[in-house]
Length: 488
Length: 72
Image 1 (cartoon, each protein chain N blue to C red):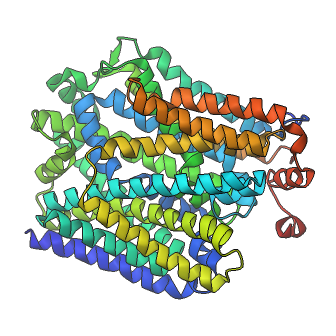
Image 2 (cartoon, rainbow over the protein chains, first blue to last red; image 1 turned 180 degrees about the vertical axis):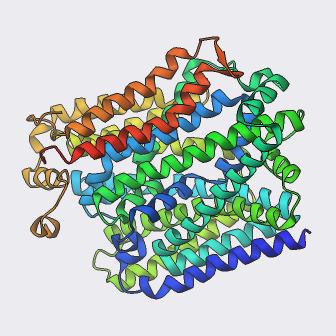
Image 3 (cartoon, rainbow over the protein chains, first blue to last red; image 1 turned 90 degrees about the horizontal axis):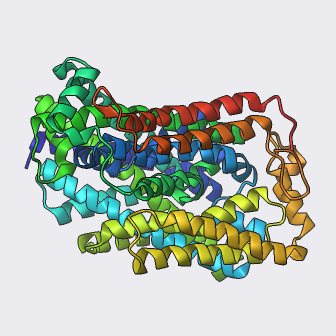
């Protein structure tokens, strides 16, 4: 066991728990404080929190491994989709979702469509998809801790899950936000530090690229994959900013619509710097220094160990990787608890529940979600990567058309949204399980199909649109809301 | 996007940044078969890398122009 690195990581974990304890008094006042941080988060804080929520363990370890294995162009194609997806969300959904003052995606769909079946299906899809996402992240945390700290996998999984469950359950969205800022800054600093050190070692950025691509020609070339695979990889993440709940929830926490839109863009500029320079440095440096790695995902750790001899810096780097995992997982677990409490318990089981009861249920559900994640992460399914990818694609196929058309199209009806949701999600799963389409390309068919069904069914059922609902949706498009409009 | 009977209006800043951004997202795929390289990296790779910076900047410019439009 590496004691110094472990001590630094434990110190970092204690800071996270301390933040949760500090903000626990603030969130006990109202459920809005617990779920959406009182809608008071400013642009700077939200930008870093958004960046950290997207920048998972995969961003720090997986993306470098992907670059090392399949080349830089393929990796950039995947991550450019995610980066471009946030500005897309800033344009298409951020202002409106913030102005409607809802707490969750299903709450918006209820406001817009008032469809009972949709109100049950969507939270269930979110619950399953987000829990799968949590398990995948938790497994990444376990594997990282085994490699870097030398502690057993089960210990690492339980420890990591307990830490973020503790601070999320007591501190809610305030704790998630503040720890995410800390984790985001730590993550970006360490990746940039490693990148600069690598560039300095090779004699500059261009020298690094030239030596890396000379060592392995495939590093700079377009990988031998179908174009549809590239387009699918790009598109899955392009629509994620509008649909994946733990990212959309950050829009609800913003102090106003403009701040939400600005933070979506600023966060991606930070993320782009980290991914662009990190991938070039580590993939190229890794190919020169370690040309035959059996496990490509370890390339960042190998390069880091090579260039950072200081054990304190290495300990901070371990904390940075753990931060990447935890900053995504804490937001995910809050999204799971939010779907269970706000969209299922409050809406279908106990509609008269008081603020205090909702707060207590949030705490209970956070622990249930955390313990379930530990259970599945200790015995992870073999096809976990497939399931996790399917989860993001399923959310996009199910929710993208109902959300976007619900905001922009006046003729979008409740039946149109329901069928769009069912056909989008159903066709995605069919294409995923029963056809041999290239990996990640299924969304290229399921999402347009979902839009087509929404248009077709809504056109037939247009007579059922409630003018009062349309008026509310119209108010959400305004830049500035009056007091009367906010109260309405 | 102008206010019509079926769609909520979109400000000019947002509309043009959306069109520019979608064009920028589609453009790299026309270079996917291009065999040219710059500093050892394919042109497709460079364009995708630069898109990561362009996309947020385009949207930020749209937000900056947003203030000159009429509310829906």
